[in-house]
Image 1 (tube, one colour):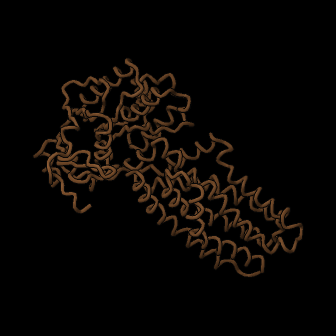
Image 2 (image 1 turned 30 degrees about the vertical axis):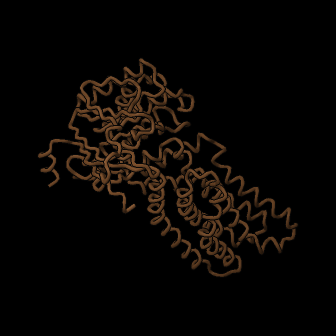
Length: 226
Length: 228
C-alpha cells in the first residue's frame, strides 16, 4: 500500500495566507499593536536617550510576545467555529502537518512583519545600531517559536469564553526562554559581545518547538472534539 | 491477512456491538451494522437520541465506549489511512471558509482529500447541487441552504467511498432535496456507501433503516460501566 504524496502543508499554508489577505487589516492588527505599544514608551518614560537605550531590547521583545498573543486567538477559532477543524482531524492528511502549516502562516502574518518593523522601533527607542541586525534576526527565529508554542495554548483554549485572559496566563510562562535568549542576544550585540551563543540557543528552542509542538497541538485538538 | 478477512466477510463497513456514552448518559449500545458497496443506511430517532453521535463515532471524532468499526476488514480506528481516504463526513457545521469563494472552498477540500483537482470535475460537482453559477461568490454571502449544498458538494466532487451525512436535508428546499437524492443514488450506483441521519423525508431506495431507539440501554449488564 503506497502512501500517496501529501500536499496538505502547502495547500493549507496557501489557504490561510489568502484568507489573511482577504481579511486585510484584521490580520495585521497585531503588528500595529506591536508598533503602537512601543511608541508609548518614549512618551511614558520621557525622552531620556540613555534610559531608553538600556531597556529597548527588552521592551521590543515584550511587545513582540504580547502582539503574538493577541493574534493567537485567530489561529484555530474560525476553523473551529465553522466546523473545518473537525473535518481536518478526520481527513487523510496528517494533522500535525496541517497544524505546522497554520503556525507558519500565522508567523508570516505576525512574526515576519514584526521583524521587518523592528528597525523602526529600534530607532524610536534609541537602540544602538550595533544591535539592529541581531534584533531582526532574533525576532525572525524567535517569532517562529512563539507561533508554534502558542498553537498549543490556542488548541487547549478552543471554545472557552474567557479565552483571551487564560491564553495570556498559559502562554506567557512558555514564552520566557525565548524572551531571555532573544533579548539577551540583542543586549550582547549592543555591548559589543558575540551574540552567537544566544542565537544558537534560541535556534534550538525554535527547532524543537517546530518539531514537537504540532504533535502536542494535534492531541489537544483531538481532545477538544470529544 | 486483512485482505483475506475482507474477502471472507464481503462487507466493506462493519460496526460490531458499538456503544457510545455522552455526558454520562449511555446513548446506544450493541449496535451492529454491516454494509457493502452500494448499500445505504438511514439512521432515525428522536432529537437527542444519538444519531449525530453515531455518525461522529463512525467518523472517528468520538471514541466509542465499546465495540469496533471495521473498514475492508481492518480496524478503522487503528489503521485509519485507508478509511480516511474513503470517508466524507458532512456534519452539522458546514466546514466552509466564509471569505473564500465557493470554488476555492471546494478546491481546498479536493486537495486535502487527495482527489483529482480537475476543474471540470469540481464544476460538475457544483452543478449537481445547483451552485455552478455562484462558484466565484464568497461563501459568506450564501444562504443557509446554499451553504448546506456546498458542504454536500465537498463529498460529491471528491471521490469518497463512504458518505456520513448528518441531517443532509436541513435548510434545503424540495428541489435541492431531489438533487441530493439523485447524487446519493448515483454515488451508490458507483459502489459508494451512504449512512445518513435524518428526521426529514429523504427518499433512498432499498436502504436499511436503523432506529437508534432500538439500541437504547435496557438490559442490565449489557455494557459494563464499572471501569468508568
